[in-house]
Length: 224
Image (cartoon, rainbow, N blue to C red; front, top):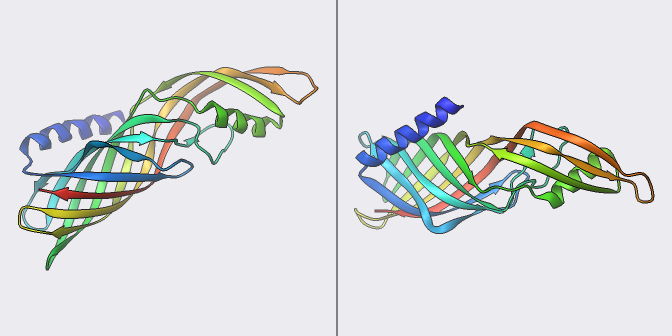
């Protein structure tokens, strides 16, 4: 995974230096077990890349997201609500596309990967305590963790439409599905119990946990 992310960032820098096309967009992410996330305007630059003829190309870019909340996996328990956030995150895609030109519109089929970097991420302790409470069968829980979030990544793919207003300007609509995440080392403790009963304290080592980034991304933008 580290090698893949290194290659993604290296290729991104190289392509950015050589590209001739670019675009701005508003991208919205609807994540699994999370809250809808929106771009931080105007920091969404997509469609940067190279075309190899009329039908094939390579695209990259970047979006600064406000992640309202994301789910987590690889915990001792399952929980279907966000366990991290809110925080800012930078998403960088790198994709190949196949383009089918039609009259006034191009259809693109995209596939590739992405890197994700969470900026100053945090645990949603309200939901985390509820998740542990359900897991233990207790009435009350209070938890505290030290966390170490890593840069993550995954795969993404979908379909895009480019509507030409002129030869130099077009409107784009992309719908893509992302599947990936990033590891987080959670070490701490929690205490709790039943109301009127004995309070217990337990150490918690969730060092194999991951922040889940899976869901639908919808981007509306302009290329010029």
